[in-house]
Every structure is written in structure tokens, then in C-alpha cells.
Image (tube, rainbow, N blue to C red; front, top):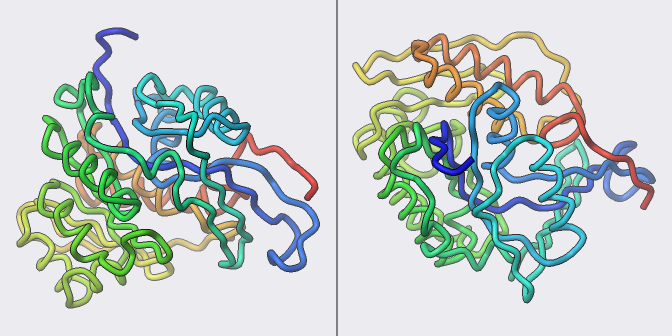
Length: 299
């Protein structure tokens, strides 16, 4: 694939994910083994839609890292810029479908990412790049790499704030994530996350966000649907559709993929909202961060 022009390049951490199949973390006896990472989840969905994707990251030289690498290779995500770190481990996420989650990621291989990880990557030629606030909160190096990704991009620059507690920089989320919002074209944020970062609510938060520089602000509202502040300042809302959620984790990443895929194909913002919502609902309807290709394990 030398000389390939990518549709979307993503940067961030992916962990081995063990998902409880039959109850809470405290009571479950069976788990599904898969992988989870905000950026790679979106890249998998985009790859399944036929887009050319590449992922920049680091994995440990361990079984978890091997599993993640092999799973993403099967999905068609280009991993040539994923380094194996012999001194650090691959992160682990243990969770259920009810909101219970535990991470083992402090000091992980991905927490050692820095701008050098971008060397040789054809970022300027990609149609779009994607990074989330999670990467910015992993450490000083990952945050610098996220900024460098956006600074070097020649195509659409998409950022999902994706605030998560318990990370190295969670208590400084505003300080670490705002530089990403100031450098992007499209924000794909949860309603509460945007309110936390810029204040206001709904359209008010979106307009405050747009004042930082983004031309397009998507607001994911969960059970209340989604909305978008378009480049011309118009505010469009999409009502939610009925759905049967099995596992909501990863639905937001699938939404991002659906929205970006539609926008890259020339769809309007409202049409892209519909595509994002459909992708998010499909992801929430199956077990695992990316659905399909999970393996059952007993723990």
C-alpha cells in the first residue's frame, strides 16, 4: 500500500477489552474478549464501509497487544505506524454493559506516544484525521502528538472531546482538550462534554464551540437524538429513533464513523447526522466495542 492516500487516519490508544456477558462485573461468569479504543473503533467502522484507514499508536509486546493488532488487521486498518513497545504493556479494560468499567492503562505503551510517532505518516494527504480528548489526557506526549496530527493535517480535522475520568489529565481536561478543539474543523461531542468544556447547553454550547474555530459542531444527545451547527450557522436537530440497546459502549465512536463517512461522500450535515445515528444504533445493538468478531472466554 505504499503511496496510498488514506481516507481517515486516527491516533490513540486501543486496549484489550473484556466485556461481561451475563451481569455486572461483580457477578458475571462469562466475558467476551474484544478490543476498545475510541479512534480505532471509528476506524474499524469506516473500514467496514469501504474507506481506507490507518491507525497510529503503540502496543505492548504482549498477548494483549498481539490480539489487538491481529483483530485490527483483520478489519483492514493499516497498522504500519503502530509500534511495538518491548518495555511497556498494552492497556486493559474490564467492563459490563451497565456502566461498570475498570481500566489498567497507566504507564501503557500508548501513554508513551509523542509527535515522533507521526514521522513518515502521510497525514497531509489524508482526506480526514480523527483524534479524541482521551488521547490528549493520556499524557504530555500523547497530547503533543494529537496537536501535531491536527497541525499537519491537510484534510478534514475531526475531534471528539470524549472526556473520561481516571486518566492522567482528567482533572485538567479543559486545558488539555481545548487546543484540539481550536485546531479542528468538525467537533463530534456529547452534550454534557461540550457544556463542561465551553459552557452553555445545546445550541448555545455548539455556538461557543464554533467561536474557537471549528466550522461544524455535532452534538450527540443520547436518548434525545443529535444535532449539528452547520458552517452557515444553521442549527439542525434529529429526533431519536426507537432502538434496543444491548451494549451502548462504542456507539458514539460508530456515530462518528457514520457521520464522517457521509460527509466524506458529500452528504449534507443533516444527512450525515442520520447516517451517524444509524451507525450508533447498530453498534449499541450488539455486544462489544465494535460488534462482531468477538471471542468468548471464561474468567
